[in-house]
Image 1 (cartoon, rainbow, N blue to C red):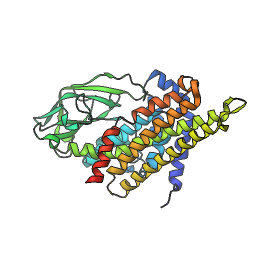
Image 2 (tube, helix red, strand yellow; image 1 turned 60 degrees about the vertical axis):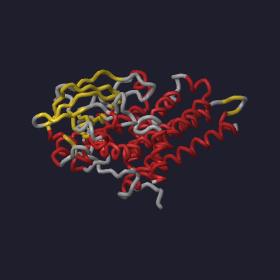
Image 3 (cartoon, rainbow, N blue to C red; image 1 turned 135 degrees about the horizontal axis):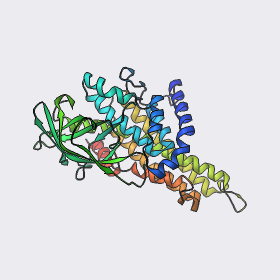
Image 4 (tube, one colour; image 1 turned 45 degrees about the vertical axis):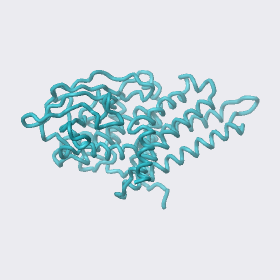
Length: 380
């Protein structure tokens, strides 16, 4: 088993790291304070080919493998957790839905502008009463003429207020349980009845707008349905499986940022006549932080490797996301402890890392749901 990066993967890592250090890190505190969508940084990432990393070049993507993509996303998230979510929701959820389940015509029309970064995508699955319990959703899509009329609402939609394309899940057969869900391509600027109710004021993940959406008598032509009717639940699960690898990448990026900041502080801060990095208590914290971050990164790449080989990876993706998300929170927490009082104030970035890290344990499968998934795979 070869753990070394290929030349291309190393070049991608270096390119994105340079962009993040020069453009994202200096802006991270401002993005966190204003919570404004950083459209200029998204445009720069599009120019670098980062908004369509895993998609084929024929659709405007960069054609990167599923090791290079998480490597790049880890670097983006190291700079800004919110920007990491923007990219992950755009590529792994919205873009991947069109790539995996769209017709050739749908890919050419809707995936190409997403993969090139000309447009931004969102994935609308969750509702007030349907988070982990997806089949409990109440949004409906009823046949009407040459298409469907969608009515309902969605919550917690990353990029939802800025997206040009939104993949929306709705019930086409309310009596069929999880076999009654279907998915659709929605175009907010074109589809009357698409309403952004507002965006959430969140603990962290700033810069990525998390929107509440409402659909009122919104007509969608049949040619914008993704795949067959009744396949939406399976599509959602398969998409989230892949997405969990990228949330693991976001988690590792935040953990690495917290570790880097803690190492720098431990080297500079002096107490009792010497730097605090000379104290064994601090050294042990740093050793654990680095070990956990490395282990999380390896789990992420293990899941990515199985995905690239076409093997089942649901358990491995769940394990990578579960472990990496909890590690990101633990590492950020220890980073605050190493900083002492300075870690608790906004003059230092450590408290931002902690706030950004917490989200990893909630979205795209809570830690509790992931443990159920892993146990189910073990016992099946």
